[in-house]
Image 1 (cartoon, helix red, strand yellow):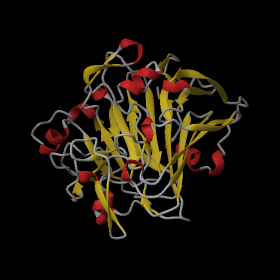
Image 2 (cartoon, one colour):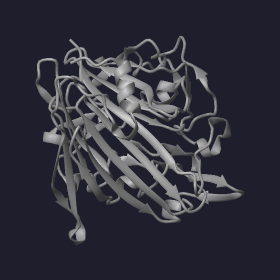
Image 3 (cartoon, helix red, strand yellow):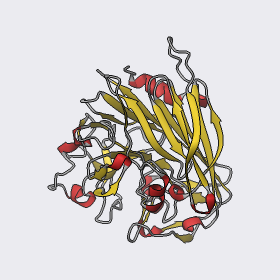
Image 4 (cartoon, one colour):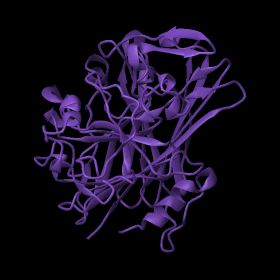
Length: 384
């Protein structure tokens, strides 16, 4: 079934998960709950699986509010799991690699792990050499979230919450966070991230799913996938993967995905110093639409062999493209598959990296009484 981009935008922007009803479908989307494993001290981690009648199914675990699996049919109806990850809880705990997790308080990198707010400098935990990455050494991805609600119906959903106390990883303010995953009959998996604080702080939350539309562990890597990003500029990085502060035009470079191009066209082009710094693509693209009230297209990924298409929509101003450059065959993922560079791609809508230290990138500040909200959509469908 092919869904138009306009329809996808309507799905994403529908308030309160109201959806476009298929004329020939009255089927409810179901939600199943089951144990996924047990942590030390007997803490049971659960998995909630949302399934629609089109063969699309998402499994979310409350360790890291993680998208553990996303099954989708190809053009022939054959279903595959299209996100990289692990089969069991122990590997998520012992060999973390951000597969499908919720990252926060601040997704991406903060230079030196430091930022100033209202004249006070805050030092964060460092977990990426001299920088803080994805919230620090024990970010949201390594926390147990509490499931607060599961619903079935035209849209099935699971909601979970987390309290991040003041000083957690060095961040000011106690943050109350909620993540809600919701799947509809049209194949749109919507993720809402909401947060409130009792003191000024910074917030930037997203999902770090790594996709391969041929199926995780497939012989085909993602270099043959076609990627489109509606962005005429990106943020160049230095050797430490921190943005330089420049907004550079993509025209005439391997970063020009505005008209769509194969990932493999530029991911190994060592003539571009930016590709050398990132060991491939590990860069933020400044979406032409900027930050928006309703989700708009941030990226479109297509695998012509399977016919699967992923559209990523978001309210945030940027999208980080990461081509799995640090996957080196030492991680054994689902079904015993070794994951290597290029076996997957992350498309992470978010505020720009290091925004708290680069005022011209905007603001990541959140104050009491002014809640944080990010809505992103992973919309999966097929074309023939």
